[in-house]
Image (cartoon, one colour):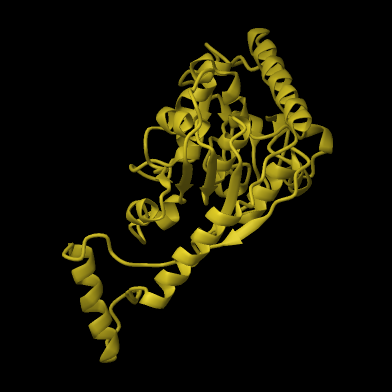
Length: 310
């Protein structure tokens, strides 16, 4: 059985990178490189934008994946084995019953022995999405505001530990909130980049019976390294556009002082007001148990040869 999940590039992305070692921990011995059976891992990948790339004749297992994005839901047939999906929006989107709702499997990280003792809680963290990371020097801004910068491209296990021992987390990355909630770190969801996706957050939150509250932080842009070749090219393109010569996508203008001040002001308000969210403990426990049982059923079926190549 081969694991498949979204790999956005060589730089990494926290939520996707969890897949690299998570499944070997919760289901030891289940995975190999045999793509006659495919396990869809964590992420918003239960949609045709992703599933159409998979081998047509493979058996496909879904356990906690989310739906949405382009292409619509997969066309389900007898090659699909649905052990559960991320949330009720995915279930409805895919034409499945609400009995298939689990939660995001990453919440089971709280079961892992290596994360059982993370030490005392200290500080408030800030975690941008990878979409925003290259637009601005968020690490510098984070330090200025007295926050702890959580890089979504850092090694995933270290990031789990850092989130689990925070007093609170302001995050644009959904799996930052998911891991925070699992370890009972209060969190605040912020949208920064124009492509910020609220639907996947609502899908996950609804699996825990929780309503989402989103806060807006102004999207700002400035190259981190003003002498880089990318910035030089951007300046050339901008100059050509100004004289009426098309040269590909127009360079994005650097954010002004007003935009930067507004961004910092909104973050300061969140730090002061602390509009944190946290799921209900009983509902979280119920969702985790549904997910544990689904994984146990999958392991039993695999051991019984249900997915063996014929």
